[in-house]
Image 1 (cartoon, rainbow, N blue to C red):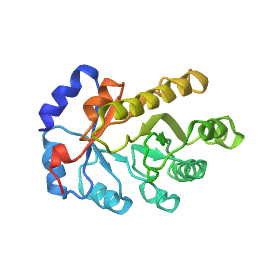
Image 2: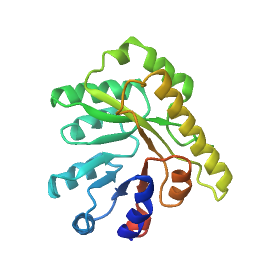
Image 3: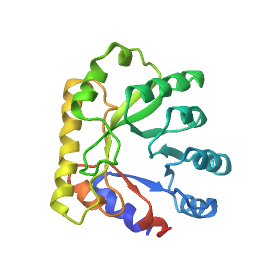
Image 4: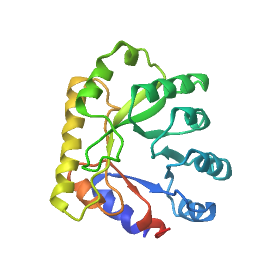
Length: 216
């Protein structure tokens, strides 16, 4: 399945994040041996344990909601934090990155779905953060793009509209805040059930778990 999905993503140069949460180390290793190097976890404890047991050239992405008190555990090695949804979290990532003499890449998470349970900024909040003095002092983080999760629904038009909205947010932020930064280029949207729709709406990074590993 991995090679099939990679072949599908190749023409658009979309990055595949293999979501390995709850999956045993041997299954991740099997996929690593097939050539996959980017894996996503949503629980910090599980991520830290797996990082300690698996090859060091794996790029680990923290993809789930992240509590500030857990940042210190992943700061030494995490490659990308997808779900940054507050200035408080940005400050903590910056602080822990500085302690580890690193600059940590982050995506700003936006609330694009109808469900109220999803986390994320709205456009007004994010502009206030990016214009603020506090943000300008954060030298150990790098904002490289945006992330969002569509509503869990079979209505493809609704999902497309939500993905399109995230792409519009990305374009506005690029123009207003990150025009000089080539590194601001990622739109992380799309999972096993909707990644093809996400790619058609401009996703640069998809997070796929159950399609690759099978259901839990």
